[in-house]
Structure formats: structure tokens, C-alpha cells
Length: 106
Image (tube, rainbow, N blue to C red; front, side, top):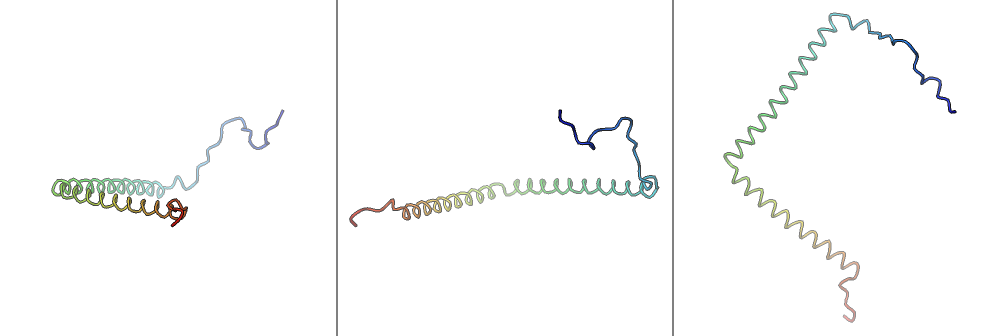
């Protein structure tokens, strides 16, 4: 039978939890409270910014929704046309290099 490596076996009994000496100082408790307060404030600020961005988008859509939709549709159509032309150019170049359009006797 295979034996395990010597260091991986768990010893019996309870593990002793050692706390750092500095955990008991009042300045550490104050630091934890300050850090928690700052983290909570940053989280609230991030949510407020997100809420303001969503509200600004809602106002923009309310006032200029139709114009924005027309602009986006025009950009989408123009991009689609450009991509189609690029695809056609790639196919033409591939066919030219492979000789697919070569006609004997020209």
C-alpha cells in the first residue's frame, strides 16, 4: 500500500487560534470602523453614480429617443454595407489568387 507524505497528516486535538497582539488595541478597532465606513460610503457613491447614469439615459431617450433610434439605425446600415463590401473584396481577392476566375484561351 502506498504511504502518504509525512507532513500531510492532521494531528489530533483542537487547533490553537493565535491572535495577534495588535488585534486587541483600541486603535485597530477604530481603524476597522473607519475602513468599514469608507467602504460603505464608496459603495453608496458607486450605486448613486450608476443610478444617475441610468436616469440620464432615461431622460435622453424620453426627449431624443426617435432621433437617437434613427441615428443608430443609419449607423447600423452603413456599417453593414461596409462589412458586406469588405467581405466581397476578400472573396474577390481569394478567387483571383486561386485562379478560380481563370479562363483558358484568353
